[in-house]
Image 1 (cartoon, rainbow, N blue to C red):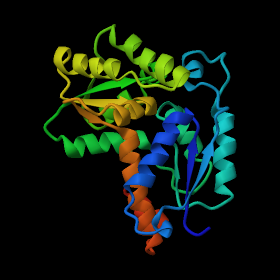
Image 2: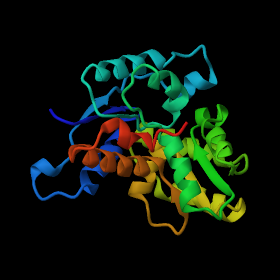
Image 3: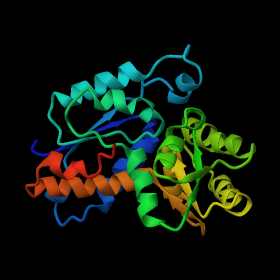
Image 4: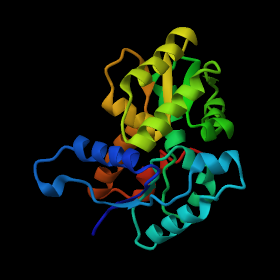
Length: 249
């Protein structure tokens, strides 16, 4: 297969399915050959990311992802994506395993916030407990010169219920709960823009988009960037050159 990219997914599987569905439906096609070439690694056995980040006595998920990245690197993809926010805890270590461009969805999303909402100094963040605990998005937001709002003590249990109890355990999106989280972040904590720092939340946005709030969806942004890069490379562009503008350091 000529010119393909690799997707390190399965964290969780339904969220990865959402990313794949986005790239399949957003690319403009007139025939089968217009779709993108990609290899999906749906590694559903990767240990829980939040569990390890919160408690290092829990199974470490790095080696599973290391094997996935090295396995794909042998195949020579043009670039690699990993549609799981919390797994970016090991992004630097994983990206260092290969010279193949490895996109960082967190950095791409934060830079888009800066570009798209230049007048906003603060962004609301809802994410897994692991991402919040290890400051994964918080550090990126501060690096960009912006402030982050997490909301009150009641927000995280609501977000955790939506991510784990509904989507991961039941495979369903509670649209009312999702909308209530957004409402509280907007009306009670003054967030004009809310960043969805978990791909399960991206799935919630895909399935329950009927709300009036501004959200920044890293998975949706990553899908658009993936399409942009894949089409440029298909048309003859050098993979490393076109990916360079998204490899924020």
